Length: 100
Image 1 (cartoon, rainbow, N blue to C red):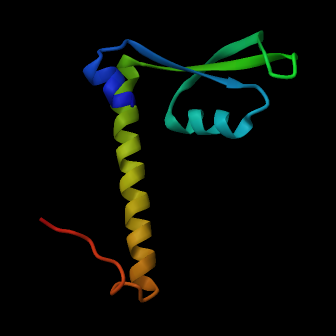
Image 2: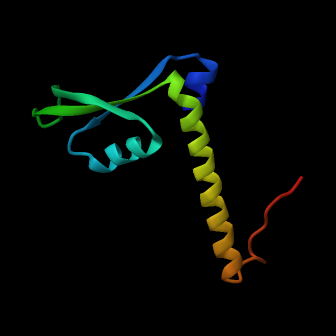
Image 3: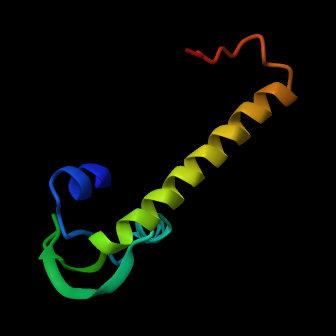
């Protein structure tokens, strides 16, 4: 989605808003490479009628090439670990990897 936003739609920035209580999502957005910009206090009312705060994050176009590279390296690393795990545990006959 970020590739599409920056490389096809030519966006200058992509922003994310996350509820202040949702620490897992905040961690995921930071791990992606976004920068925290601030907190919007009482930004919306939830289904229970309570005011909620949002944390805002963004990635700007000039940061995208480096973030994209880190994402690709991370995906490659996870793929190698996945394949290594299967070969190390004798599952190589059950796993097929198509090569063209």
